[in-house]
Image (cartoon, rainbow, N blue to C red; front, top):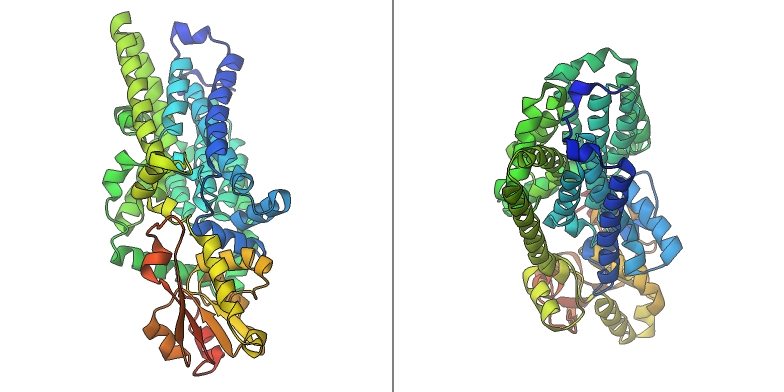
Length: 511
């Protein structure tokens, strides 16, 4: 049933608008942005992170060293449907973004907003830098964002309708989120904190609340059992990743980027108004804590700014609702002027962000500008050329060396690109201790000749014998990225100095 006091009242204007028409408008906006992403997503190549998901998709399991299995499982399906297609495999990320945009607008409707509030919410979310980025690559963060937004929407419906059965949906989404990215646990702490710190604590007495928790656990159990079998390797691995990020300053700018990147900058007054409105309305105060708790936890833990990107659609939605109500009480001239300025500002900021984030052109000034200002786009360049270089070096070796050849790599981009594109050059599967490559071990018998990438000369000389530089990493565009800058040399080496088993005893490395 609907509880009248739980929703923000609609104006007379918005009450006359048919709900079906609102949904059609929101669907059109979401699909428009989805089509634009589909049209631009084939410009360059796969990002190094995408190569990791692709290689893991070939070795399906209930877990991987850096993350849970759901993203690789989607990639496995994508490979079966589309093959090694940029646009095809990124379709899943685009669909996730389409759903985020649509549901964000629906949240504004369910919070009592009219069409203006709904449209502004959808457009502001679509033109926020981080959500925009999540549709340009196949990343687990793309789906993590989706689960956060869907949980927020279910919570809105739970509180608005006083319908405790929404806890079942929240449980399913929480379980899927835990199967996607472990950091959603901080958001679930926010959900629990919001329950305990507000009137929503009444749901603790409901069987639906506990059933939702059981469902979340059941969905997560397969990965949990995998973690137990592997001595919680992911937990220890992520501790190391976090320490590295803090050491390298990757956690800096957490607060400023909440305004600059996680949400459209022009929408800042709107989402701040939404956050205040959540706390001022007892019936929706739980959502305020769902924003504040994860943001504070990641701030204190020195997490990366984008980990909490998923909390912004709900505060933008509520801010759009209260802003619409405020505007409705103003004069028509002021209302039209401020509305126009708001949309122009959001579109202008979004267009500027898109020039840096979206791979709009494969050549010319737009491509050059994007590559100059976006390190992620630079990491999409040169992988096919790298694999071809390795094959060319292989062809210079003697038949005896080729018969006992291994390819050792130092990062997951190299691993994935050779694993996926190497077969067309008849290259062997790469070998690495990096991330989930460590789980796959090394060949038996071990290779006596190795082509080595992604390592320094000093590092490989400690491990291998008779090393020589056999080539250099390059790309046709002359782009300076991690491959060409940090480890540009490709080596050919002889046998290892000691047992290979000793390397694997150290556990997985990351790179």
